[in-house]
Length: 102
Image 1 (cartoon, one colour):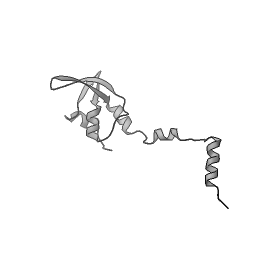
Image 2: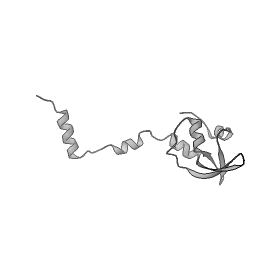
Image 3: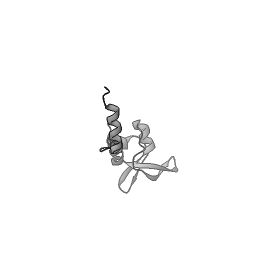
Image 4: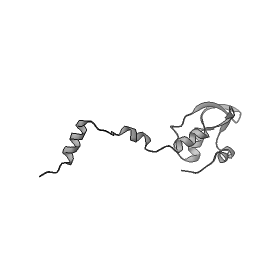
């Protein structure tokens, strides 16, 4: 994971950004390209960004949203999908499979 700061991103001209309601929003597409990471789980807002005199609607996110997504626990979704207390049928099947044969 690349270590970067918001000041570096704000100075970089390759990333489209817009200040809206006293907060900076960055194009998620440009951030994915810059970081080399997939940011599909980031909370986004669609905002109009002007490029070369034309207005484009871009999915944008704040720096805090991007950092929160990048620092998430990688296997967080996996932990909730695994049985903590498996049902009795699963316990029986596991016991049969691991039982020593005489």
